[in-house]
Length: 411
Image (cartoon, rainbow, N blue to C red):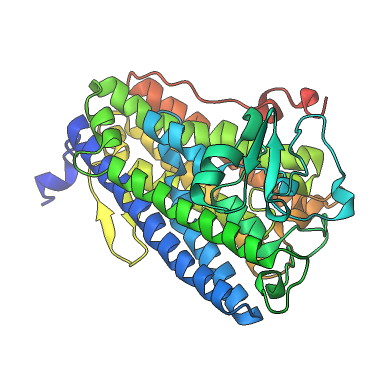
């Protein structure tokens, strides 16, 4: 005799239960990003105190490790205003390297779009930004945040966050679509055996940017805590708006942001400058963990850095109860995209082909790996939209010319 419980449809979780678990997962993910950033700071301090190939490698490894939890948080963007308003401090890209430090001659001396293209804060204790002369004698978090980051409202003037730190640890990647990441020497931080000048100021910039990253992450952790602003904001929404916020986040990340701006655009242009983690050749991991995060948010299940698991009420549980066919389809599409992401990650991690090599013109095999992922992201977005429709919700998924109007790209 079959037990009745095995044939009964699972009870749908309440929206309040879903929102609580969603907020708990946000808090845990951002806490993991914060704690790994603290480990990055420890490694950066060790590099500055004793510049060597070993301490530089340790700092780079700590940066890569810190990206794992942070990239999973990006599904909380595109609807949570607190996160949207904050995110540009920590993950803005691409950046014009000449704003920060020395660059190769191939970079050029000026840009029509950016007056600060070669400002070089590290080499100059006083800099002019528009009509103002800025005292940069001491490179502090306050200087970077208040005067340099997005100076003159130019988005490429990135002086804070993960990518400014990445550039300082790796330097420019001058390999194009050939193998190799940035190759900054440890002696760029060695005041006793300095290469490329201003080693003390380069260390100041790196330290200040890392301190600022930690304080910015501390802010967003508090925002998702019990009485935090982000948690209160989504908890105060009506049921439909709260669910739409959750699904908008993963839909917009999946489609316009990741599938379009971060992936399809680079393949269309065959341009390694469109790599998200372009200095470190870590782009494949950044994309992969975006997908891990979207799965975690939909299914209400997150594995923390320490191995513990948070699991609770989810949109997946609601869809399984109220729109089972749409849920099954979406879960299958999420799994299919994850498998394609795995191919990309394994190919890059194995050393067979880095992400920027996959972008190269006439590299049909590499292009296919990336376009397979893009197709998966587009398909899973359609699955998200079906779940949205069958739950009686409405969302606005962010678009991208690279997906919606590819003939306009490059013009």
